[in-house]
Length: 224
Image 1 (tube, rainbow, N blue to C red):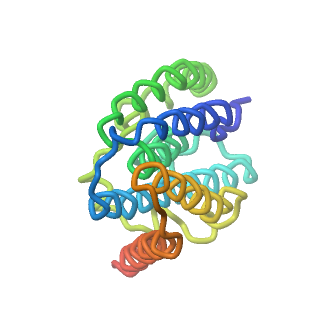
Image 2: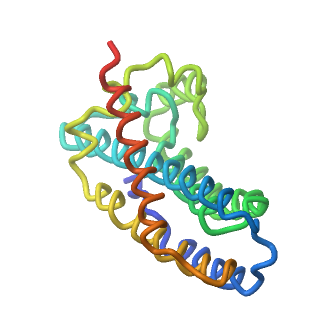
């Protein structure tokens, strides 16, 4: 049976440790608080988007597994073959913008690729073995990891993120735990880079990001 895809705790621990290491060199970070605030706001929106992608993908997979169906090709799986990995990548990318110098992003992307490419390949071999021609046809029309964004924008949010399924799994906890982790790491970063930190200001920036994300999603859900 195909293993469930979890946010890898080992790579997460490594990223946090590396973040602490980078904090020892404050001069490599942008010195502008305005630029830092913009990256924080954008980064958390990306983190929330990645979390929501994982919520929707897990929910659709759970529903279809419970119904005993075969290859899952609905919801986000109609746009990308590995939405769980896409969600994890976006969560990591968001944290890079929040707590790493943004120009180190290629290092994160390479680290992510090395960590997961073999696992993705093994899982796709398992799917090909079990679903044969059906899976091969699916692979010819649906990208492996990064969907075509023009296709995403033409699909309804209710199709990609069915409401009840999206909010039906433990992945929803990420909407709380990731922002809290971001606040902690950003507070430490400001203390190291700027010498002072403004906790309430940081909370306000991230609260604005949360509001922006959910308003944007609400607008998408209203589209006919």
